[in-house]
Length: 155
Image 1 (tube, one colour):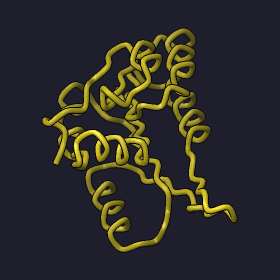
Image 2 (tube, one colour):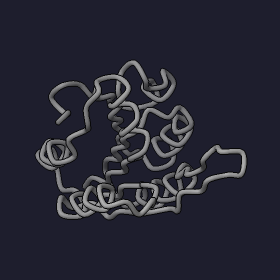
Image 3 (cartoon, one colour):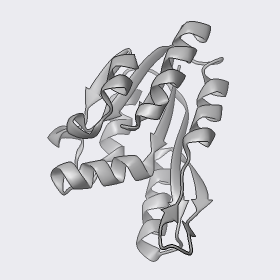
């Protein structure tokens, strides 16, 4: 049994920066589901309410993801906030009790401690999908398996 967690903003920006292309969530779903039963899949995104984003979120739902949204916050100084790290962490900790494998799509090194913790406490397998040049070395090292996002997973 497999649980999938997609840090949508991280994957969007890293694939765009590295390749100028978008990630293919449908191909990812096919690949993971061929390895076992996906019992839950969450995609964490920021809600801006634009039409293109809404279509993308609906496409994720059709594939099988539960889309979790946080509002986009524009600060007075012009910076923006929209971080799902704590939400992803809580959901991964809960799911790790009930699955054999946790799959995380992110390059964010903050998740390395999370992967180590769930491996130790729940003996789950961990897999990370990330853009090689933009994934934290500590996250890749903490993953049981690191899958490189390259041409075969891009649109």
